[in-house]
Image 1 (cartoon, rainbow, N blue to C red):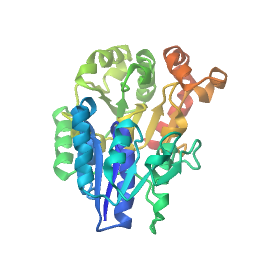
Image 2 (cartoon, one colour):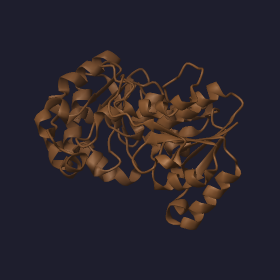
Image 3 (tube, rainbow, N blue to C red):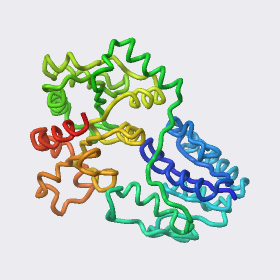
Image 4 (cartoon, rainbow, N blue to C red):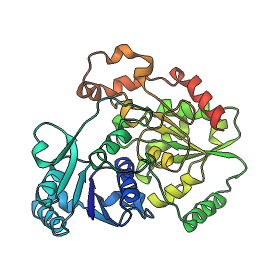
Length: 353
């Protein structure tokens, strides 16, 4: 049997959708299970033996119709028995239409049901604390009636060599390993997903207050200006606990470094999802325009906690569309003061430190 799973999106989506591959492997141990993803996200799949082949969707495929069609025909030549489209956008529709797969599964959405043999309802509300991001992916397995116990947990695989390199990095920076280490997801993927920098500094002060801990910042070198603003805005005592220049060299390096940390706090995004896949407790600050019910995965009020402005000021969201919220996100962020969730943050820290 040959199966292809499609998820052309960012790191968090690719990691979460890998649970489709993981469960397919349990059900069909001898199948060829291929995974089509953006080339830039492949690092989160390294070491995952549930995936037979990773197929790269490159920038050229996005920009060139010819390249996209060539990729689609290459996929057609594989003669897949099952195609599962977790992306369900124009690029994947073209691949699906030309795939020749006997069975094609995706979400039931207007205007595209003719492309698929199985159209799964696109859930609007979560049924459990798994979150919609997880539940929706798992729903794509339902038409196959798999005779297995479903595992909803995304996984990351870190090698011994990678762990040792991360440990050596901590030693080089003279990090005291007897202290707990907190990773801060400092900058979001865009400004509209980034908690205001001056507020983030106050959050970090709360984390550091009266706690003998090590604090690491997760940011890209190109984001160093914003990271510096946050660092400079923290208290003098907090600065002594921050290892500002301790950065992983690449995405695999970050995964290994996160594996050495005790928990993560900060902006929703790939860094948070990777930490969860490593089994680390998380405290998420959601952007006002993002729906918490989708990405507040595994939320239990103890190990995984998240906060959203809507939790505290519901009236600001009454009768507002996602488009309207996104347009007003920066103004809404200003109302999302750290004092609103300070007690909840301290409870999380006391539980997990």
